[in-house]
Length: 249
Image 1: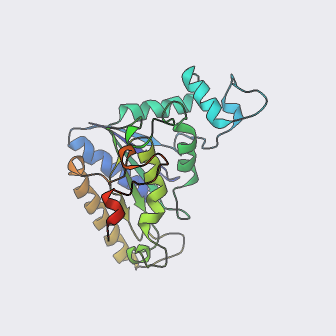
Image 2: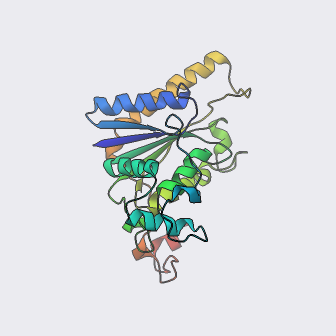
Image 3: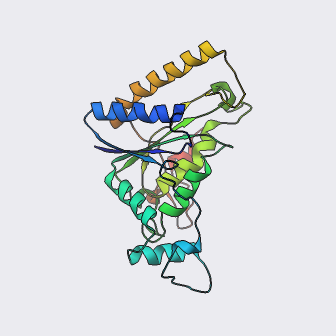
């Protein structure tokens, strides 16, 4: 299996970086091919702009989706975007490693979604969800938070972690990925906010690494998050009234 590990953290020696190293070692030991995609390390520019497109389909008005489609079709996308797409096409499994910043992924990763998942190439009106470009491939988010786990419970002060990660998971499913339940490492304190004494914190991080390593060994056989698909919706894209999920208590 080909495994792409995409890191979105500005410090390679961070705990997030350490989780990347752990995943790389675990996957290689299991016999998989592994490539690391370090967005900050490779100076990926997350900002979509008109200057990326040299042969504009519309020279008077910048419509990003129009240019993405035209440049995909003419094989003239920006070099960094083409490189990222090639990596995704190579990978059977993509591991997204990032910290939760302001209730979402870091801006560099959001911009990666904006620029790399190009319209007219990796998705279209009919090529979405369970008909998506990457159907048959799998993705998982390995995420770190600053606050402890209880803060991210449904009634915790930080809000339900399922809701914070839903946009990212939905975006991955939108382009066809089978999305695995996230690996969330809570309480990775820093920046002056501390929830544990230093010795307890170090033990916490070591335990988190062991938990991730244990899960990685069985990742291939895991079931994905259940999403509804085209056959489940009516002509307006609404879940059919006959669908079992309409009647779950």
